Length: 376
Image (cartoon, rainbow, N blue to C red):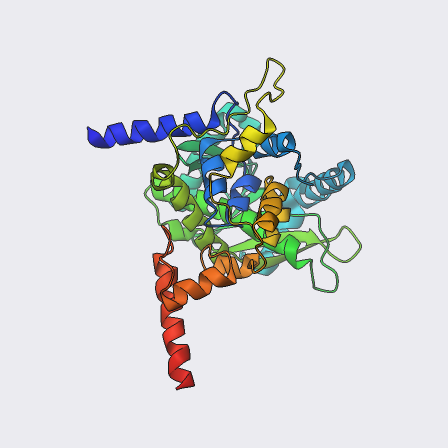
């Protein structure tokens, strides 16, 4: 009974944080962005409560520079349609070469044709049949609908394609419109695509596990399809997303265990924007800023491309004189450790690890011990 009470308190606290502002649903891009900054308590609390970070940032006077141009969206739609034309014939050609599909023809299922309200259930049925290796189960699934639990809420996700290779392996296919020129693509664009694909891999592995199958039937190598050079001819490559999966799992676990973060928060803390009847925020800006500053942020330069709160947190970090912030790759490797000073403090034992940093702190202490041994 006490466990149920704690869970009820947990839900009530998250609702109080969001207040009267409508809950913001999570899509794959938003979930992928969680993995870009593990260890940020502010983001974990805002996302866990379903707070609209974009609306909050705009109200504070720090709007984020996100959003694709209509031209980029149109170009992406045209390229995806080309890849999927004629029952994904062009995609199948690339998959045969890349994955070694041994058959000339495959069964193609467009899950979207059954209607939005049935897509999730139909996706489960098709994936279950494929995992059981039924002969008519199909190989390519277009517009599948997967789901993932995010801090107690169900997020519905639509990967571009799930490709099933006969022999027992599923592959997520991610179609992007950024170009691969002379075999090279923009590293930041590839990294963003890998984080998003990792969300789909985790969701599909979760589905297989729920259905009683081995989740590792879903490959950690995703198929990334991009236009080659300056033409629209698609080219496919494999991208290993194991590191992105590890970071994503850590962050989702952190959001699931929000009770530890909530324990240190004042009872009256809320990020409520107090919208009027037209949805315009009415809460005083200074009051909202003060509420946010009562949480701990882990700002890094890479937040500028992944989080709606980036300019607010950057301004806060500058006011606090932070000058040794680590970039995303190092932070990913260190599980959310934000600065050089924090890493050194965990390594030499002068700083106690925060919740979820215990394993990283142990590794840093071992590294520091080995460094000293090498110097003696």
